[in-house]
Length: 152
Image 1 (cartoon, rainbow, N blue to C red):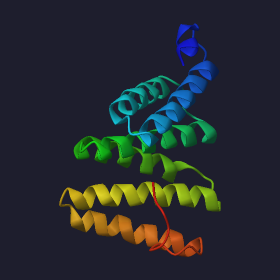
Image 2 (cartoon, rainbow, N blue to C red; image 1 turned 180 degrees about the horizontal axis):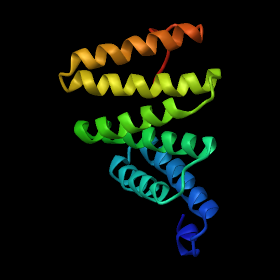
Image 3 (cartoon, rainbow, N blue to C red; image 1 turned 30 degrees about the horizontal axis):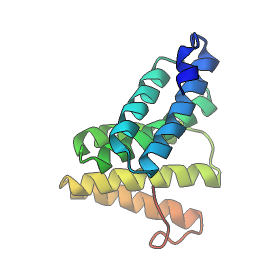
Image 4 (cartoon, helix red, strand yellow; image 1 turned 90 degrees about the horizontal axis):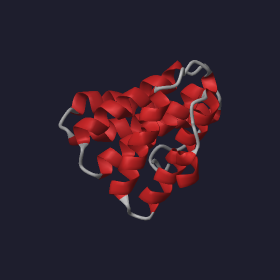
């Protein structure tokens, strides 16, 4: 990681690679319980990605994934208001993707699930209900049981 940071990262591809590496590093930190460190790294990944010209499908997918992970970390740290806005941005980005494939629907369903959980825990039950209904609809199109499916 420190090697990446010592490089002169000024091109779009290098920034994208660094942001994705930071995202993966944040996943690892989070998985081992280092949530404060994960939060800091994920914030850096989001900030870096926001400096990019995100116009292609793949770049939007990466940004949505990074935002989704950042939202999970914020939520797990009890920062529900912050998590809500980040999760909403991730859901919005997933919706803009033109890929109707199974994997894309699973990403959207997972992001919507997290968004619904956050809404519910903040007392916004009507909005949470709508999000959860959409998750169920998505899983039905995927032939997945929404009750027994594991979410991020």
